[in-house]
Length: 278
View (spheres, rainbow, N blue to C red):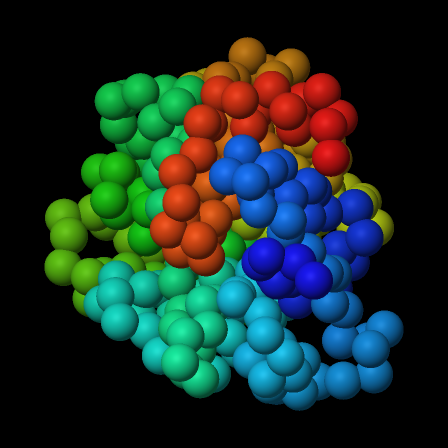
């Protein structure tokens, strides 16, 4: 029996590296970690049913990915006011029969941004995608001091809802929902993809190359593959790249802390992940 039972609920997660990250984190601490991929369609169960199963069968916690992060936020106890404002949960810890929700996408994006850009301000940022990860990343932009956030989502109401939530956070950052990707991207400092486009199984890019030009940096929340069409185009335009791998790494490190309360040698973890160790 594993010392620590974890899992990931989501669709299209066969290529996820989350199981490796947590097994390697466990190895650093002398723990045997079992980390299961839990796909509702494959299991023939709803998100609620899988969540209940995990809570009843000895799981310490689960990660949550597309498209269940906003659903998850309605099913757990959230103690952090910022996570309540975000309205999305990607990490759940079970304790004494209760389920507690966290958002390490939020903290992970901040960590990944600072690892690449240091103390540089984000400036004016165009963001494609107002779903669960989009909510986490845009609240991260508020914390990082973005001067303006422009949102675009194919579901215009979703973009407007997120824009209102960001304005209600009480910062000086200007926030607007844009009517098109072109309006979102115009005269920006940075561009961000928070849609599933570019992910394995979802080819394409939410921000075409002809909308790039003059921006300083780009971030893609997708990390499988690391070199998405969006980031390849952004690099070709001379932009500084923040890979989705940085978000993956830091959200995983922060989730491990929530699950285990145990330390990590982050440099060693990066090396082990890069080496293919399991």
